[in-house]
Image (cartoon, rainbow, N blue to C red):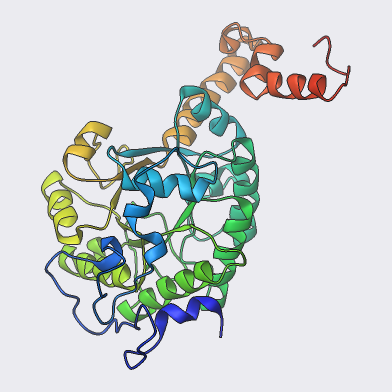
Length: 362
């Protein structure tokens, strides 16, 4: 038996900290969850509980150099976690330069930047992992939350996704309940799988994380796109089931009003709630302060970098076509200034510390 399966033994097992849940049953609606209970509290039947991930374990001490642990510390402590969406190395460097302490690898942005294609289930696991390896390598201590779409297949593929994301250095991933031929959560015509299939995906992710060799504090985020398809009540039920199955954070896509966000946060307490803001999308353009006041714990701005890139690059190309020069679009940034944003000084310093002389003059 894989180590992670220990947390999903039957209710007849007396030595298991958790028992398997049934996605057919309605979850309890008292707004409580044992993910935040102390290790001395006996978990409710049907609810995943791993004392190692109790938020109380992450309240004290300096922020960890391990990105998943660092993210758990940020979730356990006051303040909203702000994660701008990045689409490539340039946008990641710009986010780090601006001082953000968390980043979000958007599936839509990854598909657009790597493939030049729309977010319609075209990018593969390899596309996502290769992008994550590069982004996470730029600042290994900075948590990166990565989109994992539907898990790219059945339970075995969900588990494989978790393993590859952990190895790539990703701190957290979200997995959703759309059908395999998914689309951006802010497009119309979405279809979702059954509750049971969604919860099976969450279980597979949790089992894979808990069985990762050497252990991992990797964060599992359950996302539902059912609000626009089946209504808000069903969306909240699905997220409660996901939380019971072991999801560390709940993500409801397409929350259309502040009141609905507030009621969702209240219904899912004490689980942290993630809100996705896309200008012109289904969710209002909440500011970070507004989202925090409404109870959200994580706010992501999925398309902030790639939409800005489209505007900037489009303008630069049109200017070049019209004027025959890139002088105006460069805005005085010479090659060295550009490379400085990309980490030039880090490379020069490393070479000098190692005794090299390749970059004495750049």
